[in-house]
Length: 198
Ligand code: NAP
Image (cartoon, rainbow, N blue to C red; front, side, top):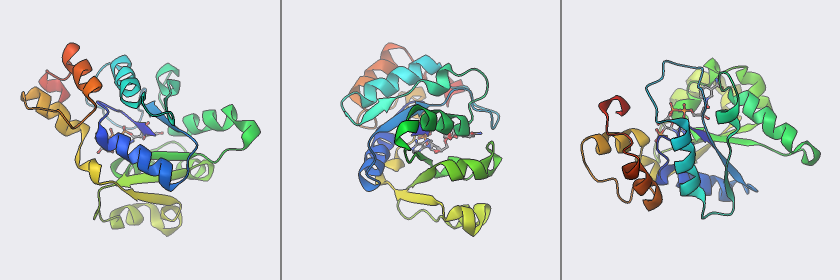
């Protein structure tokens, strides 16, 4: 489960649990992104804050884990390196790896490092809101690559990290959009008060 998690919210948690049940996954590892290579990034909260919020949010689910693999790796974070890391970690089991992320990120997959090889090493689960038209993704990827992607509709994805950051900036409530422990962590550490986080 790859993402910036800035901050993690119930949309992410619900996608992960839905994917776990639908695809019968043994475990879902949440992997906060380290140093994304792909685009001019907006400023994000400190990686250690994003990591700790992810740990707080996932701690109650025994099938969820949080990985520091992208945070601790030097240089740009390529998803293909992360998948290779997991294949190597469990090589004795020949695991089937699924890479779960949001469809907006999947739209840009052709700009990622070695996209075709990446798609041969793992199955992508692309999380969308119900009713989302995946036609644009099919056009971008072409039928052959598109066929390799599993779509997962998740109603809770109406929640977004962008909206949560914006709400904090405007002094609006964020209660019930993310776990209470994460809400408290954000306020205690005064995250996202600044308009640069919008
Ligand atoms: P992003 O631009 O921060 O997010 C794009 C959209 O996808 C946002 O709407 C976001 O919603 C949603 N999203 C992100 N992660 C999600 C998740 N796990 N479940 C559901 N929705 C999700 O995308 P990003 O976080 O940078 O990238 C996503 C993943 O792709 C990361 O693991 C990243 O490392 C990987 N990636 C790899 C490469 C590469 O290898 N070259 C390049 C780009 C991205 P929220 O804002 O609400 O999360």
